[in-house]
Image (cartoon, rainbow, N blue to C red; front, side, top):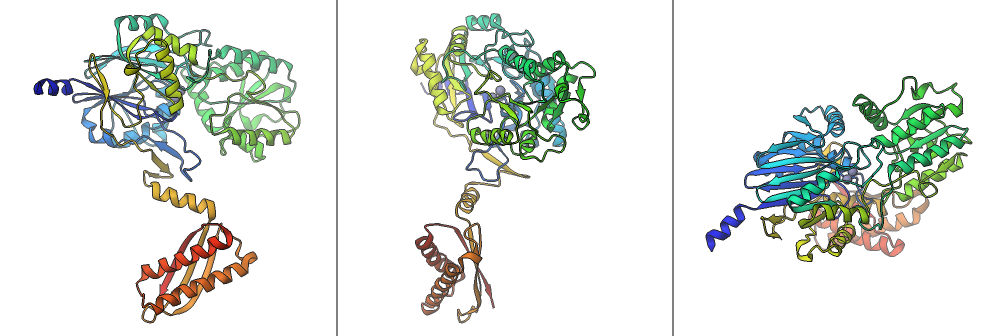
Length: 559
Ligand SMILES: [Zn+2]
Ligand SMILES: [Zn+2]
């Protein structure tokens, strides 16, 4: 019995999500069998409102750094930031081979250049099969909001693990290459042990519309418009950009590109042949003066209201080449990612104020999602028919909804596993369970050049500072007698404007003096004790007077 148990543990596959669960972002999944590891994707996420000053968020690589010698490679499902954005940071720790289709590898190549890194990049295409240690990986064409996306069917020693990657079912994608249903059905028929599937739109009924309808909506806008057109969209949505170019050609407009990431992706996609722009259509954004408005379209970044992106700068009136003017037609060809709604509507308002006509997804079919809705997910489940199922790529509510969809299709509830980042699904040919382990998986925050040096304590301070500001108490104190030689002076930032609140500040000075006097009387000389006495009495005074709790920082100089 004992040996049996040991054997069972040794021969199991461990599936470890390091990111992408209970969040939409920083996707990274680890498959581990004995002393071999395969990684699927290595993404980043963007900070939420509570993460003051944070630029990006990464998965925790600690477990992988510890097990670096086991890693056979990283396989990339597609080129979105939430799947490739973490790669440069990962490679700084461990240089492992990376496998991906051409567009994601091109995008990764650009990132590596920026970070001055080199890596072993291996181009694969949909339909390829290759071996990484004991894992035999097959890639299957899928459709998503970026070209060159794949699903992965991975043969492991315990059975097949199928990962959908991000997908939607688009029967009429612009490149005419739909998802490979034949192969999916064959894989399902041979038997899949575990499926991990995209849950982003699991709470939405019906189907996600085809990219084709966006083309139609754009066409009717182009047809009716006689003014300048500015279209903001995701730079990675090459098909969308192609549609804009096609319409420009059809209606005799030249195309100018604005925004660094848009310029980068357009160049790369043209180089790789994913984007076809006839000669003479592209024009430098700085050379559009002199071209009649009805003959120009500007494609720009910033559809999510990102403050530094080109569209925000246009809306604010500080874009170098483009001044928004009356009559401009601005199209936001995207819908706000949850959390961005307010910034996007601010931009829409500013554009209207400047006299532009603004079309956004609430009022026309100018955007479709890249993720499968309920009916598409059902189709995937029916084709793949996995024994075990693990919903991924979603917040908790999305994962729950996706689990319910599977169960309604007859999946046994005990075979559905909703994990958290850092949990381990232990898998054998006929069993699966979540272990008691906790693999480090707290978000790693990147601020400027610092990776992981901003933790909870720093964030808490930033939150407090942002909410109620800062009061600094400066005093020179005679250490021997405890007497105040100069000060206390009170300086404030972000709390109240000192000059307009002289009474309050004067009273605060008195409170500080009293607190220090009390320490002298009580024969308290210890520096930290003095500081906390001042902090405590000032805090209660300020709270009583203002109902605010600024950060209080006593600075005492010894004389
Ligand atoms: Zn994606
Ligand atoms: Zn994604």
